[in-house]
Image 1 (tube, rainbow, N blue to C red):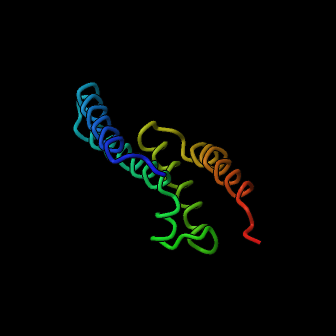
Image 2 (cartoon, one colour):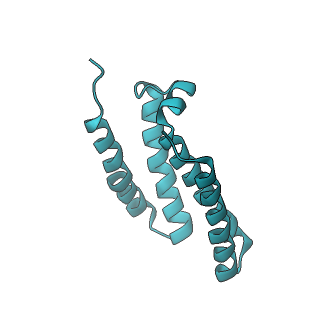
Image 3 (cartoon, rainbow, N blue to C red):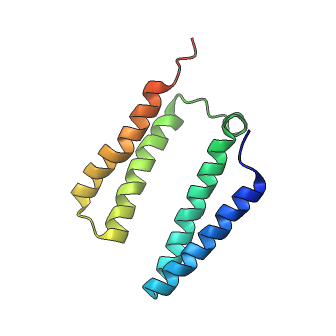
Length: 117
């Protein structure tokens, strides 16, 4: 049982309010739009994970093969690039942090997943 659609609508409304707040506080539309995109993607990911069975069967994600490895590498790179562009982290440090932080989540997920035997 996933999240109710009304809950997801509230999450998207909160995303809009938070992004408007970022726009107002930062004074730039770009910062507001970046936060809107990031928070909307996070809301969509949470919604998809709450409907995990439907999402994995529809997208044919079985948790093995090249798509899994691409997701690991892409998430590490995206987190590092966001750290560099938004918070002015040094590039090497951002990639090390991303590998440790995001990589530990992926590793934990892989270790607790059943083998399917």
